[in-house]
Figure 1 (cartoon, one colour):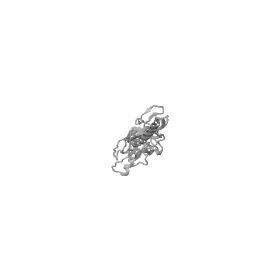
Figure 2: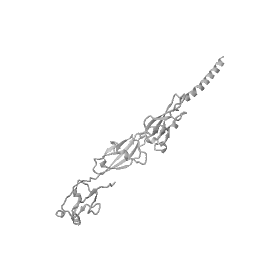
Figure 3: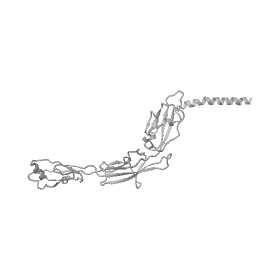
Figure 4: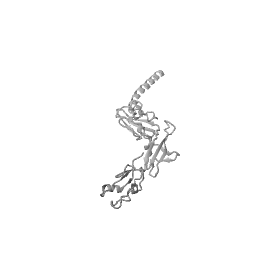
Amino acid sequence: MAKNYISYLHFVLFFIFFTVLPSKLSAQCAGNDNVNELICDVTNPIYQSVDLFSLLGGSPVPGGTWTDDNNSKGLNPSTGILNAQFILSGGEYHYTYTAPATSGCTDNKAVVTITIGAYVGVGSQATVCNENGLFNLFTAFDSKVMGPHVNGKFTTTTGQPVESTIEIGQYTTKTTLDFIYTVPPVLACSPNSKSTNVQVTIYIAPKIGRPVDLELCGTTDLAGYTNLDLFDQLIGGDRGGNWTGTGLTSATDHNINLQELFDANRTWRIFLYLYCFSSSW
């Protein structure tokens, strides 16, 4: 009698196993959460198009939608394609897949976890004019490659903290400033922070000055103006610019003979002279 009871028990357990398993599979129509996907070399072009659906475990039903749980940018919610290079900081990010309505589906969500390694960018050299007033140090990176993650800190070469936007209007002579940009480590990829150097050269905008008009009588007042320096008619103007106007022989010439100009015309005239600077950097 005991022998028959044991055989019956084996039969019942065997039967229950095969009736519960299909129900379990049907309930998980979104698939299973993935194991953390590491992207430690985010500049690799392959990470411009990461298929999140392929990272789900189990047998997810296609045709659902995706949600960027951390609002990290770069995700197409319809296709589930992620451009990891659009993410602005290293760290761990979560994306939820919601499967389409399916008969018998009780668990229609699954999460893909991705860790992005720290990326500091490629520091470069920038030139700027002091009359701009402010300068954003993030624009002083090599624009031909992926831009840096923005969760780092700027310091001077002596370690003093610096804001990412600096004031440059106070400089009165050409000045070169050196900075270090450092992003914190993402431990899943590396225990070390990453740094790069940024250099900014500030040029001084020339002062064009304020012109002073000169009104003279052609028949009586010109004897003292046979070698008029046009810079004498500017208040507060910097030298080094270019002049244009009647009687000048070149862009750098700034002396005119008003007596000679009058004698050539023998009538009243208005002579206009333009002074300007061109960029030298």
